[in-house]
Length: 74
Image 1 (tube, rainbow, N blue to C red):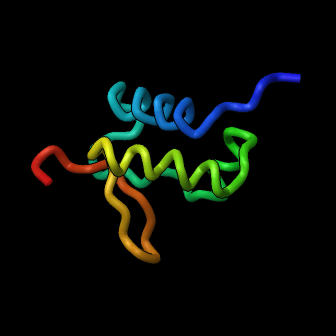
Image 2 (image 1 turned 60 degrees about the vertical axis):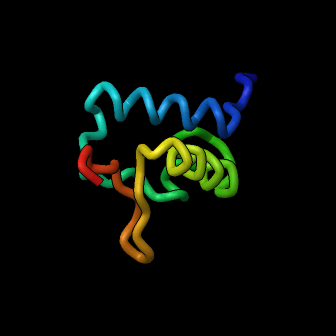
Image 3 (image 1 turned 135 degrees about the vertical axis):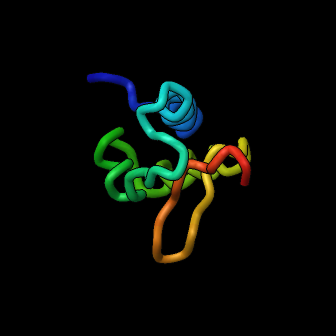
């Protein structure tokens, strides 16, 4: 059985996708439930991964709208 990714590993993977342009500036990231399904982790783990990206300044969240890749000038 494959080992589940930690929230840090998920954050690193998402950061790499942002840096490669897969998720461009202004793009909306998948929702927490979508991320949980995508990475086969719990909702809470997906939430923690996004929290790491917020701390790194890569994403910004808007209540009831979602989490988006931060624009360079924000």
